[in-house]
Image (cartoon, rainbow, N blue to C red; front, top):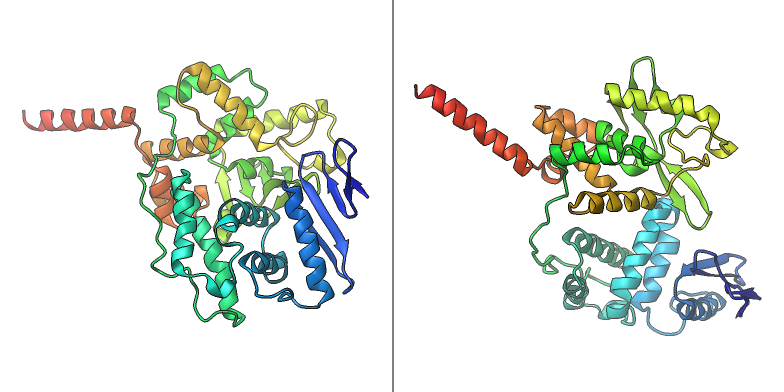
Length: 377
């Protein structure tokens, strides 16, 4: 019998983990092991009952019509399986449980119409979801309904072209001005993660890429780093793991500035003073205990610095935005920046990262004014 964190019996196959979430596990009569995670204990209990019944009757259609809820889990567990990353799977589950399940989860798959899918989008929009999140929500719905079409369960995908993403004014990515950047570096120089913050500002790497950088990826002789991994924390395994980039453009080589090179040299020297566990000896950026750092810890410290500075909050990704903006301001060609950032499309580089700050706009207008004034003399 499994127990919760307070020692209360939960039932066979059920257990609460120290992070707070629950898991359900059982071996069916087909010999296969079935497992699921959730924050909702009652949801897990219902899942165990339904799944055991379905396995016993040897059909995912057992118990009547195929519901969207049953189909989603079959699609995820049997069709997608290991073709998606653990983090992607978690994102699918979170979006389904928080946005789709309560609206159409109870419906039969063949009863779902475009208007029902639009309701899912609209409710998420009304709750303040960002446009990018709404687009991802639509992509997930379209994918598992398309699989239903492929398996001849329905004739048409209800996530048709008439299911629209409502328009919302796009928020500009947070970018530090040059003045803010200088003040930030001055105020954060005593923080334990100062090197990591400055390294992102000097290279533009993603937070996961920073955390996943290995010593074998560092070319000291040619002053370059090779991006080949991105780190994530696996809650199910309770450990940090390195994954390959999501696309080929993610694999890239980044030349090191003098500051970035100095940071790596300093980290190499400091390594001898750390008690590093064997599994993390190959990692470049570790905390004082010799372990990788959760990305949330980086952002928490940044929010406090922003508060101390009296400016709007910013994150590790903001530092990546800031790197790109400084590159353009310095005259870097967009195509070169695209390669450094690891973007597959130039439009992503220009649309998401290149935003002239108010400070830079004033400088550019001053240049125009000086030019036109001198030409009129």
